[in-house]
Image 1 (cartoon, rainbow, N blue to C red):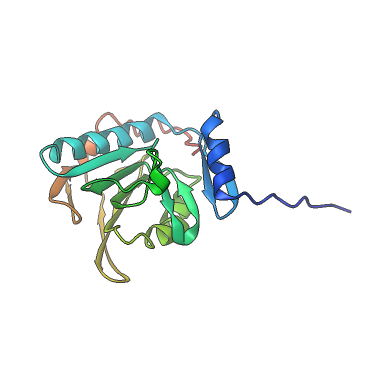
Image 2: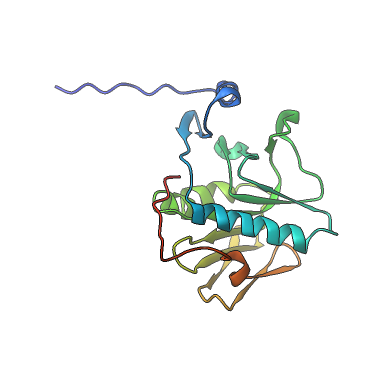
Length: 198
């Protein structure tokens, strides 16, 4: 006969204490702590390219770009997570005055991996949609040219645009900015596909 061990449920405060001294990052989803594995070089290149493109395009404007190490708190879903790239209009709103946790992105970008792409498209997007400030969600393939853009058009209404040609440019709907796919995929090596564990 098999026995099943009940997994412990953690309070958000316990998660934050553990995260402060952990050797690796974890997400918090309504009581559960889920370790995040490291990403591939393609993943890293795309995140860096997106971060640089946004910073260059918006350097004279009142926006801030954050990536990977800045946490996002989603109160309606009780989730702490680390989006690949986040954009804030104006000043970041910090949760409980924590300088490492924000609550007000207008744009979130996730680079897809085999292990997370279903969650990024469904469960995570459902959680992100509860953020009042969020106006745009972008998913980026790392093993081929492919971008999915979701733009908020009204309350509970989102439009969808797909990009799959390197000579295209993505026109962001939440901010005045256009980024070429060739810039986003700069130095990404499709022929050397790596297994991404995050």
